[in-house]
Amino acid sequence: MNIMAEMSTAFVLSGYRENTVSQQSSPGILVFSRSRQLQYVNRRALELTRTTGQAMTELGSIALPSRLLALRDQIQEILDVRLRDNIWEPFEVSRVVSESGQRLLLRGFGHPDREANHDSRIIIVLEEFRSAEKDENHKLCA
Image (cartoon, rainbow, N blue to C red; front, side, top):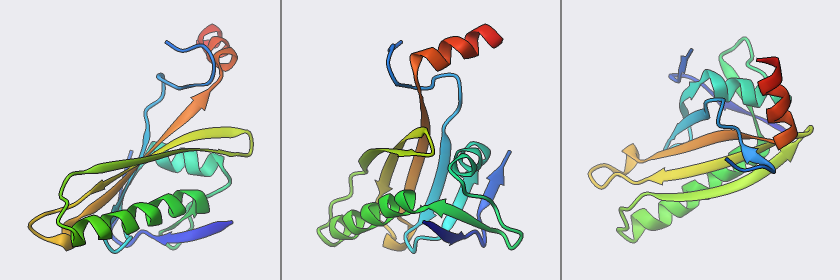
């Protein structure tokens, strides 16, 4: 299921053996405002979301996987509760998702802003899991 996220003012910038997060590739990063608008996305995030069947549209919108948006919504709910209870420490929520043979570690961070609640942010970092065999093949080809 694809869900569109408006990108009105977003900026787009250019050791274990089994199933480890790839250390050779940079992470994908998405930053959302408290109103759930996409504020920033890097190229790697675009690549990783395209790999899972998503693409950028001509109208400046990005189709993001529903699991990623569900994580964003979960973080938003936690953030709302923490702001209401005057809890100002950042927090993290993680999950692993698999789609089309690709496994991603999604790490979501809620960053409350004590001075202005509307300036609180949600940051989601996407990291690709690679099997040890895939990493060995990548080293041989390099």
